[in-house]
Length: 297
Length: 235
Ligand SMILES: Nc1ncnc2c1ncn2[C@@H]1O[C@H](COP(=O)(O)OP(=O)(O)OP(=O)(O)O)[C@@H](O)[C@H]1O
Ligand SMILES: [Mg+2]
Image (cartoon, rainbow over all chains, first blue to last red; front, side):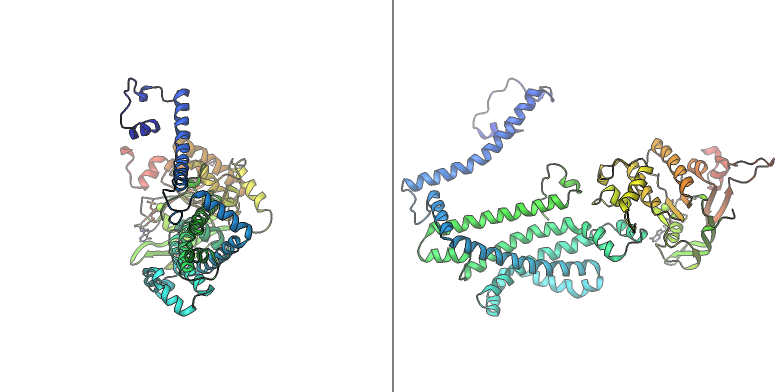
């Protein structure tokens, strides 16, 4: 697959005298070639972005791209070091992370509680679900002006917005997870005489966990998005403030730096969620061995 | 036969909606007695077993069963997120859960797989774990609903001797629902056939033989098949 894939990207197909498929499937040389091609592609996949960054650097240095438009990567790096040493970058980063974490925990608790209630009880579903679904239909960022009227531009507004963005993915996936629990296992719980505490801890929560963790991964993404927006609209501290403050002074190097940091934290949060999935779902066939994560809902 | 009963059922009525499935069924199983229940598909065997297990409400009659009979279903129903010893210990309280679960797993020949996940087991092994989970409760009544139906013939024969040995050691009253006439003949002290919502045939294999000879009397395969509505010649 790999060599053919490489060839396909070159304009002139290499003449073939030997069909590679005719080689013995298990031959060591073919295995090694496949392995090499595999590593080669991985290397290429990392090399390509590096080349892009190098090209960007070269264009900036040559003066083809104005530093006002896009500063050189080296300049961004230097700014990062300078701001880290002065301590202001870490302080702003800390502020942003605390906002995200607080909003995430609050929204997560609300989503988990409502989701559990609705997952279990027809009554709670009748009472809660339609209202929640109606609020969910609103793109939560559209509520921003209203939220600012309620809370003003401050911590409350940012945390509320993050919490709002987190609540729905957790709610939906918790409800789904609890509904999907195998009724036969619940019946087994009755046969074994489990009390409701043990039933929840050993059958219901673990059964719903894969779905809940999927919700957590979605929630991480929305939490981050909510924070970026809230901080960009107005803040006296945090990464978004750093970016907007830099805009006043046309410091594109600082702006690019905050963008890169936002991206890095997004990646880190996702990896953390994947790690959590692999740890908690070791029993799950899908996380067997190499542990490719799941995609989609 | 004079042993304390494991379960006594009298005049049991069970209906799904307006459709009665069990209509006045009487049954008594002594502790240590192994009873096999045969009957055509859909005659109500699972319905009876679920009623005995206290899983479904009943519409009439009386069931005097221990507070917590152990049940083995047709599928093993292991919790995929718990390892084997935790699965076996599900519902055990008190101390030394791991030791008791380990001993039970040892009895079914899986003593070296305590920490394995259920998905690492074959069908027969998983069903053995389910058996261990049932027996570790030391039940007075063990209800088995076609527990070997999904297994291949060889594994099934091995399971027969395992179950016979375990039951002989723990002495619960056993109700085994099965479609397999040979299985019933091989394992049971008593063989019942269910028809029209009640027990239509009850053969005790431990009756004293005709010539006063003590020993097990087996109903013939043909006789049982006839009870089940299958003409012997056609088999
Ligand atoms: N949950 C249910 N709701 C309505 N009817 C049911 C339900 N479960 C079983 N029945 C009906 O009750 C009758 C007895 O079913 P049951 O499952 O007890 O049969 P069975 O003897 O165990 O059959 P099999 O040997 O095929 O397992 C059947 O006619 C079936 O259609
Ligand atoms: Mg059945």
